Amino acid sequence: MVHSKETEPEHRFYGFTRTVSASLTHLICIVFTVFITVLSRPGSSLFSWHPFLMTLAFSLFMTEAILLFSPHGSPIKSLPHKTKGRVHWILQCICVSCAVLGLAAIFYNKHLNDKPHFTSWHGFLGLITVCVVGLQSLAAVPLIFHSLAKGWSLAKLKRYHAACGLVTYLLGSVSLLLGLCSAWFAASVSGYTWYLSALCPALTALVMMNQVTTAYMAKKRFQS
Image (cartoon, rainbow, N blue to C red):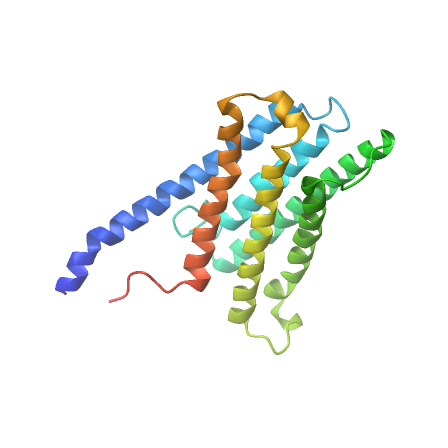
């Protein structure tokens, strides 16, 4: 009993910090998406759809899809886990749709301007990321319809999905960071704005890593 009383403040502090970090992540991904939207002005050119849709996909929808399972930051944490899974999959499908459209926009824009495709690290990794996120969403179908995964336990499927999902999210974050190194973004911002922009996908990636590793890979920190 004494042990539990001693660890109670630690439990509260841990829960408070996790709640704050999750809330800040919601705010960061929204602010970053709005900032890129204002900067790119979607519809002003064919190219403008690329940064807008890619940021929408990997900064907003994918982040929010993972945060649905956060015990401290989920906007629907009171709903059953099965419902969260369905909403997560829907958000991921929207993410894939935005990513594919964003990829199509830059591909067609380069075609019209007679420029080579996927010659930069940003373009090459972006293509890989879009393919991986599409496969990841398809691989999640057995989690919704478990009868399709014969011989696999639901717990094992969730662990594999979480690990692969984290890798996918990190790929998306690196792709966004490389996009901030592009000539378009460098010409659009200056000074500390670039560093603040780069902090957004970097910080959200750290929060997502902590959430996934805590939930599926690390031992529970508070066990008596």
